[in-house]
Length: 303
Image (tube, one colour):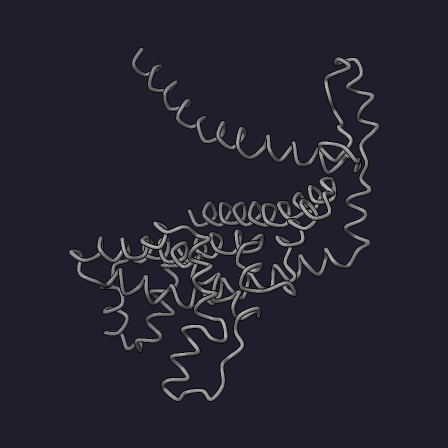
């Protein structure tokens, strides 16, 4: 009897995340997908509803014929959306790489720090989350603008003769994304590096390996799961980022998050904006699923 109760409990525990994904991911995705197959209308909501149960289940099958894929065809015909997707991926990729360059030394230093001060270092990494994300991004406007704090310091020290133009450029977007998402890179890296046996580095150096060679042959391979997790945690939200490009990048910045906002609120074209969101989600989720399957196969082959 106890074994049966334990088995049922285990299945329920496993079922909880699947129910969570069903309620908060799959159902909203299906709603957005349904809107993307509808047509624009001057109404509230501004689209022609499809798959409604007002006429009963008997008319439900007939409503499938009302689906329209014109919105997806429109995305392929207008180069604006392709350029927005491409620009978002490039900016997110560069930002992720820069975040890794900045976050890896910090995580490594935290992992090598004395155990007594590691909780304090972790708290300092998480501390920015105690402030509103929007306020933190607005603060960078005051730092990066021509008469901002950064230019005042550089002018006062004589490093530059005239203010740098950083705000409303891609450089400002990179700075904002790296600053905002740095904890998402540091935490998984720290988790992987903390578990590493650092005596392996000493053994590699005793065998004639240089410190740089020991890092690339021992430390980095062992921290690779943290690198992958951190890159995914930064890259995925950075692709669809809206606040940072809008505030720091200016009106000329082309990213899919801003394009989606314009279609949804400015143009009030919910079907097209839903199609944009569906394509964006598929571009992010499908490669991750293939990557996870490849990792699972590699682990099975390793065993």
